[in-house]
Amino acid sequence: MDGGRHAERRSSRGSLHGKSALTCPVSRCSFQHKKGIPVEIRDEHRIDAPVEKVWAALNDPEVLQICIPGCERLEKSTDTDMSATVVLKVGPIKARFEGSVQLCDLNPPCSYTIVGEGKGGVAGFAKGSADVTLTEQADGGTLLRYNVKVDIGGKIAQLGSRLIDSTARKLSAQFFSKFVSSLDKETAF
Image: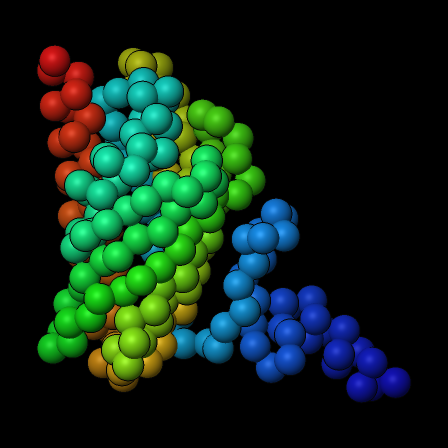
């Protein structure tokens, strides 16, 4: 009887044959992986552009490729699927990550969930999800909120959670600085 409860508890956490799974309601958006160092970042950014314009930019591969630090390639294969190549340096380790991203729980132009994974060979892996919401502000601007949960493993994980966390926050800040700048340039024309 205890074994049944234990198995039930295990399955409610998304465990499958000793591996955890990040699952989106859309069945093709699920990933199974070994656990690494968990990283969670919650933040919000005020953007001086209407929600529709921010939504369009968040779904434009050309804008995203410019804004994602180290992004060499970003290709959209469907409205909800993208693949990318990103070169990142975390401490002394520099790696090229090949990855895939799916957009799930789409509620245009208000919110979606991004589920993705990237593999950097012996350097490691990153797998996770981000919940993104856009809220129209009284002055016509947009409040973008996000909650990112990622597991990082391999040699990069051996560097420790503090370095990984500070690098993730730095990369996030770089992305939003470029993203807001790209929207400002677009608005100026």
